[in-house]
Length: 365
Ligand SMILES: [Zn+2]
Image 1 (cartoon, rainbow, N blue to C red):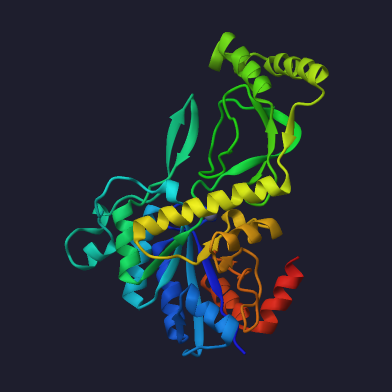
Image 2: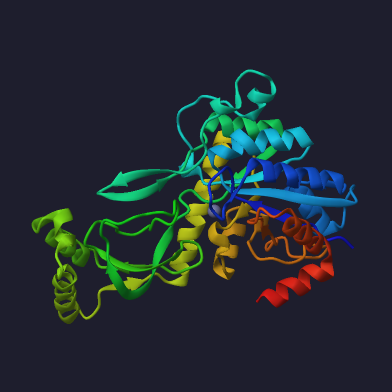
């Protein structure tokens, strides 16, 4: 029996980041897959194998990209095409540029139309917002997304609209204030006006949201506005001033907010999943059946909502074996995050073997 390794990539670019693999290393991976006789299959072919045992290959992989950055178009798509592979792209729809024009990519270099140095830059940039650095990513535009999807080389599937978190605790960890944001995703769905309450943040689909009272947040935010706004946070005791407002409020009202119920979360997740599925399907004009959880975070409630929203196959970031009889609602993937080719070879071999994949994933726990 064969276990289908599902590879998870994020960036193909030159950033020095665990989520980035350089185009040269990515090409090495593709060369190696080809040399070893692997073919690439898509989500539905994988499911067919896992459910019915049907296959017309000896060794197969599923190549996936999460989030959808400009480098998927500039580097990944032409390289996949060059080696005759196909892949899945789990796209964050909010992250797609509205502007409609096909930018240059590596194919234009291959065709002699442009020099390598004219390729769009795909490395992260930083913007200064309220005096602090914020990471900015180069985005795909919808025409590139549609072009790749139509080509049959990169099949586009949803990965959420916002890729955001929710406040998932009622323990105050601080107050929203100007600060560095060096991770691109992870914005919070709740109130983030300066001065408002900040709590532990968790992936939106897997946790019940804590919703602080709006009156309290309004009071806190107003206090910040009335006392110098950005300058307010330069005060040494700014926290104590806000703490006092919270304590007075808590004493008067007895609580500072409520958690959503499981049922409410189910409805919220269902709404979000239907929204992103519908939005993507409108853009690419075809049905989608697979979804990948942002940060790989999910639970029984989110799986139920995903099924109700019309998804049949769910991609996780858990490692393990994908064999005949494995659950297509919990497809295993492994992150390709090291540039070392030997590391890649080892993982590929391991996740192709039902036994090794299971043993290794068990040991990792
Ligand atoms: Zn993601």
